[in-house]
Amino acid sequence: MELLLPRTCGGCGAPGASLCEACKKAWRRPPKRASVALDLPVWSLSPYEGAHRSVLIAMKEHGRADLMGFVAAAVGASISYLASQGEIEHDITLVPAPTRAATRRRRGGDPVERVCKKTRFTTFPCLQISPRTPDSVGQTAQQRRLNMRVDLVRRPRGPVLIVDDVVTTGATIAASAHVLRSAGVQVRGALTYCEA
Ligand SMILES: [Zn+2]
Image (cartoon, rainbow, N blue to C red; front, side, top):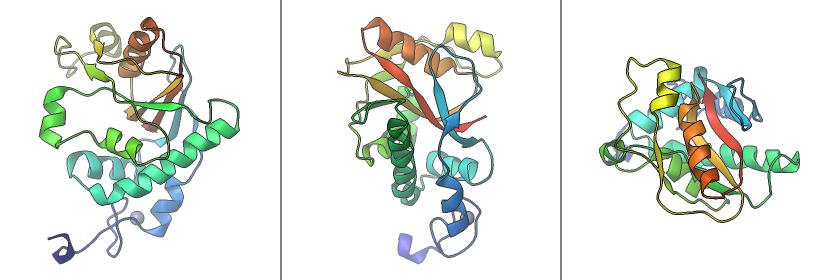
């Protein structure tokens, strides 16, 4: 079926390829420290705009699985870069940020987890947003942080890096780091594709 559909760039909509050269170039920039204030380092590939934002939405909302290979290469390169800078271990374990079970079912899986599994790093999905967490719509950043509950389904070994697509208030990352640390897991930080 895919062969019958015209391909457009997931970053800018240009016809021809899954991702055009200009958008690929944008995605190859090394990660930077995000400005969100948490008690662990958060690195991000880009502000939530342009090719990053479009690709993220295409994967998450439109099921564009054809973009995942390239995104995984970019994310993997970013993690290797952080390791080469001495920020994290070369054999760090990736923990995809938690999602809600209902969202997972609707999307037929979790795009962040699928991207992580396409990198060379060990991926250990072990977090889930608790059903007790109220919907965040209309909540302030502080309310989100107070209300967010994350459950640890199983315990990873060794130091971990949390991976998410976009960081806004940091509520999900903070709650994830908390539940991991409470179980004695060393959390080196978080990497997100975008910072909103
Ligand atoms: Zn493009």
